[in-house]
Structures are given as C-alpha cells and as structure tokens.
Image (cartoon, rainbow, N blue to C red; front, side, top):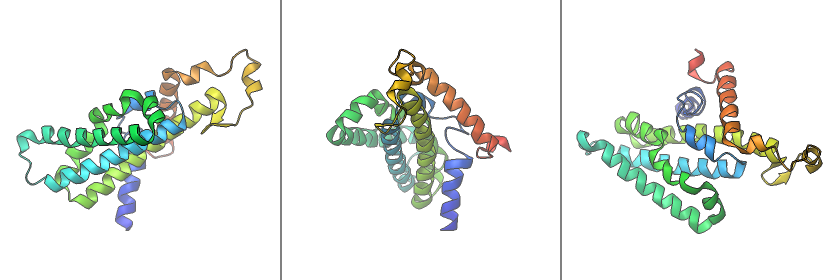
Length: 206
C-alpha cells in the first residue's frame, strides 16, 4: 500500500504530466473555461489512460516491437471512441461543450507516453496505478485553472454565484472577458507551474 501511495504521489505531484513534463497543454488551455468541463475532461483522460495502460501491459509480451505504436494507437482510439459515446449518451451538453477535444485525447502525449514509457515494461497493476496517478495529476491542474477562470471570469463556481453580478456591472460588462479566453488559461498555467516548482512539487525544482 505504501508503494502504491508513493507511486501515485510521484505521478500526480512530483512528476506531474502538465506542471513538470509540460504535456497535454492544448486541452489545459481549451477546456478549462469552467470546473465542470475540467472535471469531465479529467475523468475521460483517467478512464482512457487506465484502460490503455492495463491493456498494453497485458499485451506487452506479444506485441511486435516494430508495430507497438500502431497497436497503442489502436487501443487508445478504441477507448476514446467508447468514452466519447458514453458522454454523448449521458452528458450530451458537456460533450458538446468539450467538442473535438474528447476525440483529441487520442493524440494526447500523456496517454501514448505512459503506454510507451511504463505500460510496455511493467505488469498490469503497477501500470494501472501509474495511469491513475498521472490522470489525477492532469485533472487537478485542469480543475485549478478552471476554477480560477470560472470564478474570476463570471463570478461563479460550479454554476453557483460567488461574486455578485453588480461587481461586473459596475465596469459595464457582465463578465471578465480576459478570463474566458485562452490567453488567460495560458497565463494561469504558467503561474501554476511556477508555484508548483516553488513548492517543490515538480522535479524541475531539484
């Protein structure tokens, strides 16, 4: 149990896929307009990452080395299609909000990176914990950015009003236009990476 906790902590904090490895940046900039989108995107990535890591690990000894990337892409794309269909069936509005970025999980460097770097050389259970740790690390970064953008952009958090609308009306606007745009996510992501390294979370600070 201690080794599992250490593995998850290492993957989600010290070698965080976004804050340390700087992977999955596109979705971090695109789907973090609010916390709900960030949570759903994070859950989708965790599901795909866990399934692909376990599947690749189970097949690692029978996959020909020369076509391993093709096999990995086939596994990941199958899981992404399944996740996309589940979202369309049960969370249709969220699926529309996330648009093409669910499908683009196929090209997410975190997914293929963990399959190649970890699942191809380790048993299924360690591969699963590695996937969960990296998925949690990816998700908390998206949620933090989404929370700041939703709160400062429109004064809400998970749809609940936190900052009075009068605060924005006094400026002549109904929201903070900068925070709902991608440049705000880029600025917040840079600040988050900096804070993470200052706190000793990312290995880049060592």
